[in-house]
Image 1 (tube, rainbow, N blue to C red):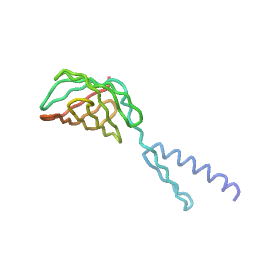
Image 2: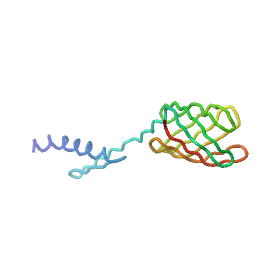
Image 3: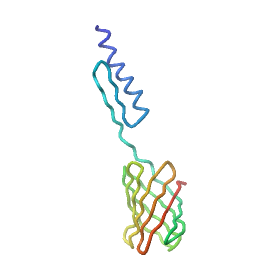
Image 4: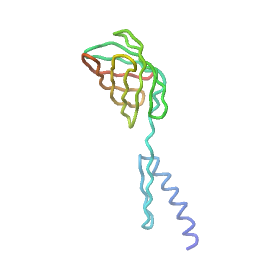
Length: 136
């Protein structure tokens, strides 16, 4: 019985560690005791330069320069048409991204991020459309 008590915590730790690597949450049940471990979602790393294109009411290309701190984003976006460089702020959470221009006519972007690609839709005074970007 002594050896059994001693190995149970070790076995439980090994099983929890093994199952946690396979998903966002894992549950282990041993001898009627249930242990649950929930992994917290990590934010994709968006810091750096992204090259993209937009279409719809306005169309052209853009370059985003992001700095990320947790789920918060800040940086600049350089648009080809109308030609301008604007400050942007936003958030990323569970693969969803939202950002917008700061200090000028408001342009808002929303969409999703997967690896080194993101895409979605934008709204601007007078219209909107779609956008996509890839990390350089």
